[in-house]
Image (cartoon, rainbow, N blue to C red; front, side, top):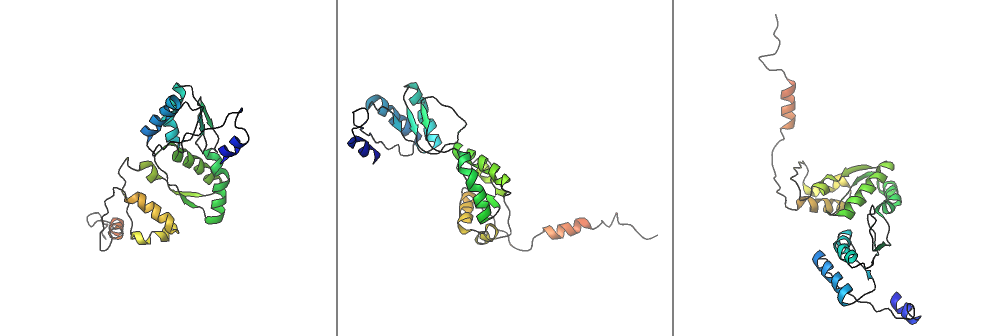
Amino acid sequence: MAIDEINKAGGVAGMPIEPVIVDAKSDFNVYSEKTKELILRNKVVSIFGCYTSASRKAILPTVMAQDHLLYYPTCYEGAECTQNTICTGPLANQHSKDLIPYMVEQFGKKVFFVGSNYVWPKESNKNAKIWLQKAGGELLFDVLSARHERAATIITSNLAFSEWNRVFGDDKLTAALLDRLGQHADVLVTRGPGDRVPHAVKRSQPDEETAPTAP
């Protein structure tokens, strides 16, 4: 590891680096607790870590209150300037600028976005939508991500779920969509002929009472 190489070369300012490793268990409360321990009990010089923007935001109040230093080493959404934080990863627009045009060229123009309900997926999808429009792509599906676990959504289809991959053209993509759709969902299956065509025909025919009669 880099720490071993640095220590073998004499450390930093003649002092070896001593890493203190903690597991936050992907729990925002644990992130906050462990951050306090690292700063107050372990007396670390700085913190390297967090892998989601949500976890970064969870520990920032503690980092700033203690006037400490956080190095955030992965991608983030940008649009913020926070004291006591150094972000070293790429921004959401830097992810999308080259990737989206390449995907449109290589795999086609029809796209839907899937993301969890926190700041990075939201900002990432927002940037990706801009580059998709510039690349001439067509965004088919981002409404469910916005409505997921927030509001009821009714979807009708005359295709069985096993046939949806014919529409999206990709088994994995279809599986991801159905996974999102199926959570907390009630599926109602109706059988028999549809009633749209008969209703449309009926609407197009004049009523007997109003039909013109021959003189």
